[in-house]
Every structure is written in structure tokens, then in C-alpha cells.
Length: 453
Image 1 (cartoon, one colour):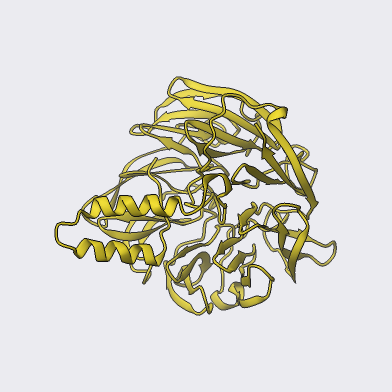
Image 2 (image 1 turned 135 degrees about the vertical axis):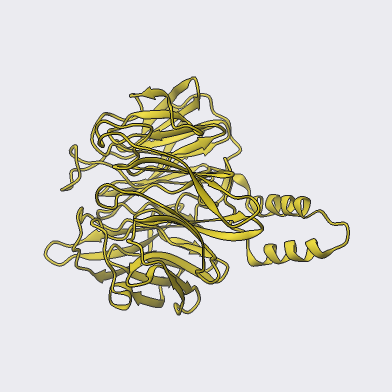
């Protein structure tokens, strides 16, 4: 899979300088810097500081090859009581962060910070909120940590920057008030990202503020872009035709923007039949981007390698979310490996598709039980696939065009019954994989497990 690397400003400056030296190969220098950035932390202790990991692509950087998984391979280190929510934990500098919802008559979102080794609380920040969205069970986005700052984004548009160590509020934006947000039915869910000195958020503001960039140090608005409806899909940044390109899958388009200015490089129209429901992230397998959503099936877009342009390759959808074609994902982001796509369909079927056609190769029904919106999150690690399904099971397996092989599973945290979540409770939050430790949550507990074998 093509990897989206978030390189520091210093590293990017080194690339620029090296490119000007006579006889220097930019390709070689870039590769060397990539290795340097990736190995800045030992693999056994590497953090998970944002949604879907260090490079925002669901890759677990761990120097460990396992061929099976059983209860003796994992040791529970601690658990902590928390409130409800879908905000997946993130880990940085010895701390674990997440968001939850508490209260009966008066609801409050909380940003929580725990000691990563013990589970003891370090700090918390609480603020009242009034949900006017479906599934009012708690925050969706993951806390983003960079250097000494932590950034949280609530369901109703509350955007905070904290001192990551102390919880001191450095700045705050009331997105609902400032940008006149047009909320999607389930509220704001797309985890923010940082590019250079900008914090970029899918805010859903009107009239031209679906995507908003803020100065990450001060909270000042740097730019706004797009009149699209907001979706739940987290943005990514890629390199295309020698430029950095912010890729945003909104409720109306897949768009490529200049992350510095918000200028629109390209758009590919996303045709939806019902309400906005695209949650999974765009998946890049250069030069292609694969998309999948619950109602509207799958779409493949090709990136131009010489210009900042993009075009539709194919789109496929079944008659409905029950009678599906190709892949109709709901919550989890698919995995693309070479010429094949692997993802969870609308009612829990684990499927493999041909990337270039969308034709189905195989279907598996063992990863997660059948059910509407059934879910499993994926993380790649070497030649293995780790999945965290909605039952709270950590599953180790392999995937190929020949099929899915289950190498074992262990339950990390049991779901609890919270209305309106289906099936008596589901665990829909993305876990964190930091070093040998896995941090996962339910609507009542945050747990830490460690691989011991």
C-alpha cells in the first residue's frame, strides 16, 4: 500500500536543499529521509499520536512476527472507567488520550488523559454540550497530539488545543457559532490532521467552510474552502506531481486541495443516493484512491502523476445497502494491497475485490457476526492483518486473493448496552497500537493489553 508520510518541516526543508545540490538524486534523498523519520522512535516503543497511527494509514510498526494468537500471548496491564463515545484512544509521550460523554440531564464532553503505563488519570477537561444529532452517544474524533500540544474536536464543533502534559487550554474555537455549521445527521466525526503549521478540520461550515485550516499555535483561521456538506471521513495528505495535496472526501466530492492555501486542485463528484454516510477514509494505492460507503458502494479514482488532476475510473453500487455490489463499507477503512481491496461490507461480510474492476473475489463471514453496520477495524503489521471487531475481539489473520485465514482471537474489552447502539452493545472505536501495547475502549472502559510472547 502507498504510505502517506507526515514529515516534519525540518525534514521537508532538507529535501528542498538537497534537491538543489548538483548531481543529487531527489528520489534517493527522499528515501533516506523517509527512513530517518520512520525510525526516529524504536519500533517497540513507537507512539500512536493520531487517528489510525503515526502515518495515518493503519500500520502497526512493530518488529514482531506472530503466526498465532491466544490468551497466553496477551497480558492485561490495566483498565480505567470512562464514559460513552466512539473516540478512539491515541498515545504519545507516555500518555493516552480520548474523549467521552458523561451526564444524565445535562451532558458534557470530556477530554481525558491517562498515564500510559498505569492507567492513572493525568488530567481531564469537561465542557457542557447539547447534542442535536443521531446516535448521541459521545464524541467521534480522536485526540491528535503533536509535540507538546493536544487537539480535540467534539461532535458539535468544539475545537480545543491543550498543553498535552497539563491539560491547560491554549485556545478554543466554538465551531458551531463561528462557522454556522450544517451538521450531518450523526454530528462531526472526522479526526483533524496537522500539515506544517496548520491544523486542518472537516468543519462543515457555511457557506464556504466545509474544510477549515487553523494556525495550530494560535487557533487563528488560515483559510476556508468548499461549500460541500460535511462527511465523517478523516482527511489525508499525499504527494502528487511534486506537490503536497490535501485529500478530503466530503458529502459531495472527493477533493484535492493545496494544504497551505485551500486552493482546489481537483474534484471528483461523489454521487450519493441518500444522506451523507461516508465514514471510511480514502485509501491510496498509487496512483489510485479507493472509496467505499454504506449506501453508495465503491469508487476508484486515478491521480495524474504529472499534474494535480484526478479522474474517475469506475463506480459500483448494489440495489440497496442489503443487496450490495463491490463493497459498501460503513465504519471501517478498507485495506488495499497491490491489485486487491479487503473490507467489511454493510452487514458484516468480509470481502476481497479486484482493485481495477470492483469484481468480488471472495466473501468471508467469520470475522464479525452478521448485522446491519457490523464492523471491524484493520491494522497492517508486516504480512499480517490485525482486526478489532465490534465484539471487542482482537483478531490476527492473513489475507490474500485466496482468502482470509484466522490465526486466533482474544477479547480485549466487552461491549456494554448503550442506547441506541445495536446488538446489545458494540465497540466501534479504533484502538491504538503503540509498541507492544494495544489500547482499546468500550462505552465503559479503556483497557491496555501488552503482547508478551
